[in-house]
Length: 296
Image 1 (cartoon, rainbow, N blue to C red):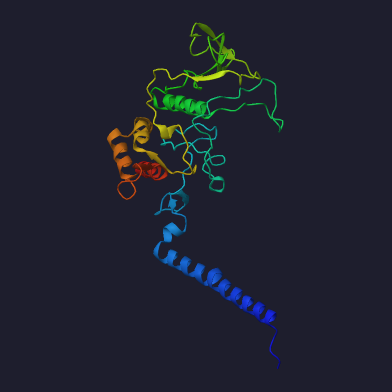
Image 2 (image 1 turned 120 degrees about the vertical axis):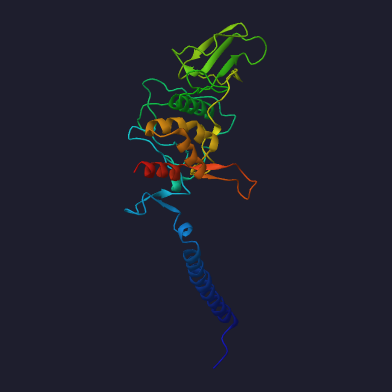
């Protein structure tokens, strides 16, 4: 039998290598890793699922690793539950759309909705809120829910970014507009450097003006994680400060002692990773489930 040509032998060797590597990396290794994970870390490997009542029906209600909203059909917070931090993942906590908003501290100018206008899909124009206005609006809502001040620096009293557009960009101002407050709103300050401040008119182009964020003297009571989304949009934890802020409301709605609710917060507080990285956090889903079991 004549020896096969070298190019055929090379192809056969490559084919054998492909088959061996496919078997090892595509079958043996995944099966081995999956088997070890199921045997040693069964709960983690299956998504760290949390059950409502293990003794009764064992119904899965979520994952300890993925946050979720505790709101009613109208989108408003259910007052007897601790609320999670905001999420920018899809419609909220969507694992298939995990993402941040990609908005940064320079994003302070809103696009005001134009009355009667429609977007590309034929829906009424709702404009576009800047990151600053999103933070201000969330802080106002949280403040009203918890019965505390929702004010914070660079925010107006009506919950939008306190930002002026000043014309001209150099020299003495001749025109000043509170661009995030749509007319007929009353500007958050009446006068800037001797010039009367105007409200913003939807559809007008103010890009030529100088952008001036106004800090004001407000002190933020609402914690940062109550008004900003996490990088993944899936964070199941809130800060201890945000949990403590919500504790009086939850205790009142459930007719529980405040000390009882605070004790549950402590039970579901995780420490810093490796003892020094990050900050302690409170798992909202597990805390709310414990509250339900307490009254069950």
